Image 1 (tube, rainbow, N blue to C red):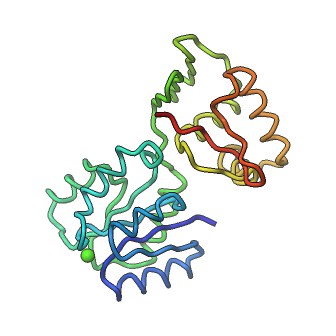
Image 2 (image 1 turned 60 degrees about the vertical axis):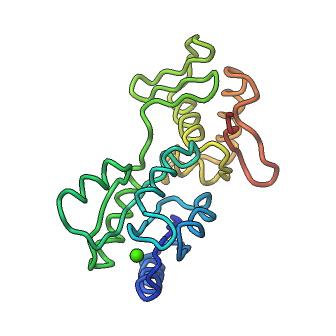
Image 3 (image 1 turned 120 degrees about the horizontal axis):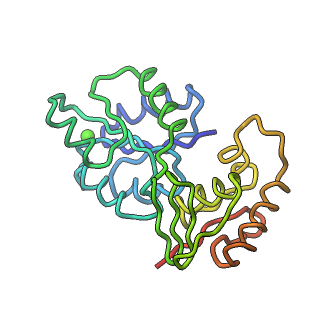
Length: 219
Ligand code: CA
């Protein structure tokens, strides 16, 4: 179930968003301020962010989020009461993936969130320490040397590296990397991780006992 984090300070709107997104089949977490929202980011697949928050401007929050490697690819939909074209452009340049102006229909919000989740926001190029991943060219370089990966190895590595520090269960990796209709088992994931470790070294993908795998956070 996709996890939505809603950061909205208006109690009535926050409550109605929570109710309608739950009804639409999302797993919902709500936060009433930017500070509270930041605490819950690690558990979110998509973020609904209000522009005007009491403790921090939504755009500033968004800029901070995009500078944090773990969240640079988190899809974000901004909510705002401002409708002018200039504000829309500013919001998109600020790193938002989509936009809704209040008042809006919750059915439309749910549809847009589903589209954002399907589309994802995979960065084209990633640098993680000595590792460079280029999605456009499907290339991986370690210390400047090309590493030859299969398609699935590449997809798995790129997915994990886009969310450093975050733990993914094997079942979730199967669904996100192989697709929901793929008839593999968690062994499939283990095998691919083992192949990646053989080709890249063991330090990139960590096993988190009883939970799954995560890409090491680089400093
Ligand atoms: Ca507000």
